[in-house]
View (cartoon, rainbow, N blue to C red):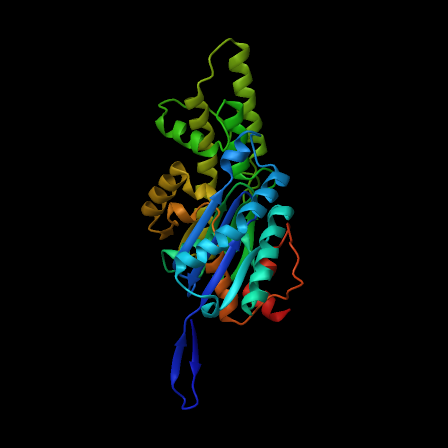
Length: 357
């Protein structure tokens, strides 16, 4: 909320109500968020069943499904929130990164709503949303380190203050979520494969031995393409020997390799940069193996760990409303000629960076 002074010098608090839209990939999502923390509504229309037939997200199909759903989901979100358009403070929408066609559907809907309701527009960064999903259930303390793990992104981000992002490490090839889906496909699990691999890994008592990609000693970057290739090689060798592929052992070996690297680099970043909290963010934050490993390690190290509720880990619009609140507080709005930016930089979206530009 903002603090205002009336004509008599009395301070009054003005709450914010942000209508947020998220269509970066295959979820049509709309939410209304109060003061960046209180979720009044959060509706999601999933396309998983549609894309399962193709073994992954088809961009053109995703865009068409967004067009079919967006008006209905927007209306339902407003009704569920119990507020009227005149009560809104702003309309926020994912500007990037994401699939350009999918982003455009949300952006057109957001611009239309902003014009119709007479409210300012806030173009919002998708990863900023995943990071600030933590603010929907906990209070973020700065400086902090965010470990972002999703289908398209694997990054370590330093936040020195609210809305100020510095990427200190990123994947050089596959993101974690991509690697999970490719490994799942190799051992016979359907799309989306991540939850199947996670479940099989936790249930298996065996694990095949797989390499860890640490890269340079001081690097916070990640690489998972070599690990994926190692999994494919191991599976092919089993088949060539006439053996039945032990899905559980492959899944556990793969997950242990991924989790060890993620945890170790995140803890090292916390120490080097003096992080007061470690934030787990993104769709893969729902992975039970990763959540357990980080919780156990942070407990031993005495480091505070924030993990969003499962409903805020995967793509949703409430997280976009939480991130957009940072810009609303500073009065930093977006022009109506805003374009979709599939490669939008997180650092350039920072509140301070935008303020100085």
